[in-house]
Amino acid sequence: MAEVFVGEAESLQGFKKRVAIKRVLPHLVENRKFLAMFLDEARLSLRLDHANVVQVFDIGRSGNTYFIVMEYVDGTNLKGLSEHLLTLGEMLPLELSCFIITEVCRGLAYAHALKDSQGNMLGIVHRDVSPPNILLSKQGEVKIVDFGLAKATSQLEHTDPGVVKGKFAYLSPESAWGRHVDLRSDVFACGVILWELLTGQRLFLGQTDIDTVELVRRADVPPVRRINPKVPEKLDQIILKSLALRPEHRFDDCGQLAEAVMGFLFEHGLKVTSFDLQRLVRRVSQEQPAPPQPKQSIIDQLIQEELNRFASLDNEDSGFSEPIGPANAFGATPLDYLGFESRAAARKRGPRGHNWSLRGSQHQQPAFAAHTNHSTKGSENEGVEIAVSPTGDESSLAHILEGEVRLGSEPPAKSRMGRVFVVVMTLMAAAAIGGAIGAYYLGWIP
Image (cartoon, rainbow, N blue to C red; front, top):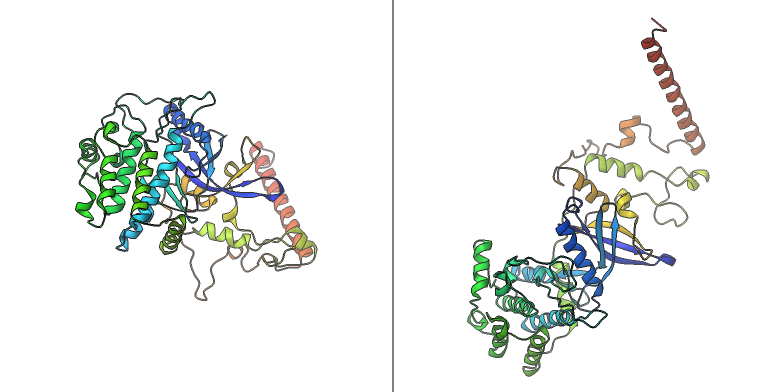
């Protein structure tokens, strides 16, 4: 329903800050219900200012679509971290699992207790607390993101009775029944996550979505110790209380759950800090393979080759016929089309005077590649590959258009004069041919 870009916020004195830009897909802007929900997320997120909540800087509109500018978290999410460890036959250490959940609870407790300017409770409930929405930075930070499904008294978009929102496996029983939810629904989701981190298994996972929802509604939770005997009884009791079927039997709020977990760590002498998480996230980030880069089509490669040949006007005037490389600070570096931004993407100007420049999509594709992928029907691997000659040299655009004559092969002054001459002669020939054709149709010449 939306796409996320890595971007740069540029302001005075060359100040730049890396940000994430979440933009509504153009075809969904006409859906008033979805647009209202998206704007609800933006309005709600602008109120949140906490170390464990991803900060939102701005809301904007560009053309027919809306976007949110938010904090960029360099790292991974809890889903990616735990799945990577499972592929290695490892599990997240018990103390780190507890640390992550307490940090999540801190962010949620802040959101739950937030008031408006008149001192009235906003009644925020996240309703979509799940591993993909828990971001872990390389600095050992834990941050909650995506309040897109959050319920608050100030929202424009209200959920109809009986409507279920959120990832099915992390719903609370009352939410799965379509009933009223409060902050104890988020307590239940935190309990599900902690149960899964300590067992390495999914708690509610049916063959179909309907089966999963039925499992959530019953909330039949086996003790953690039955699957992982290394988990102390005290912690198992804390988890089972957070996963109680009836909300009144759970912890009253996420703050109570965090205090119970931290109390367990202190009682058992388990030391854990953000530095432990920092080391693990950095290790996993190095071990995870880089996302595959889309193959360049023949057009992309030819454009790139010719752009690399261009030099600045200053270089031509000074007598240089070759482009100056990156090491020379006084000339233009070879241009890289992957660094260009589309007009719609590069000139997003926020209400506070920032220029929001899109650099790439959530798959780390460059802006140009992301734009072309959206406008074509084929997959990113489609396209004609460049043919390699027996000598190993690839065909260039200069060869195709001018035979063996390459750009910049003549002295700058003669090269410019030659190009001007060719352009003038071409225009004169075109005018003559056009005039002759027009005279023929008008009957002026037989």
